[in-house]
Image (cartoon, rainbow, N blue to C red; front, side, top):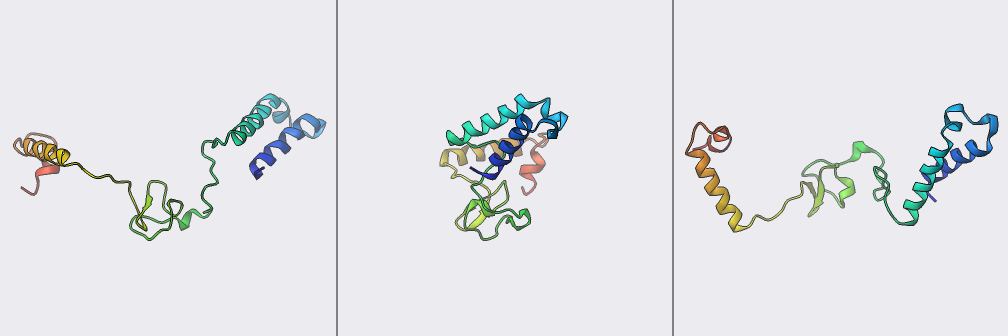
Length: 127
């Protein structure tokens, strides 16, 4: 069992067996706490991950996470929006097909032929 599960188990045991030692807020919400414990147990037995809780990465110090272009060994070393690609932290990318390149070129030509288009300055300033 992981430490989070043990802490929740201890809190539930305190509420059900602690009598006067259990705070009123917890004793009035015993069923909810038991539900959390049962949900965590089911998730651990079914190998599901709790949302927002992962033990895949062993990095605890957020200040040591790497930004774009820095050397890395795995995704856990990069900041949340980056992945480790060929030993460098970077954004997820994909290959662009020749058809997509042709479509982009024709879309750009249409935008650059109309200076009143709101995207004209973004795509056509170098023309």
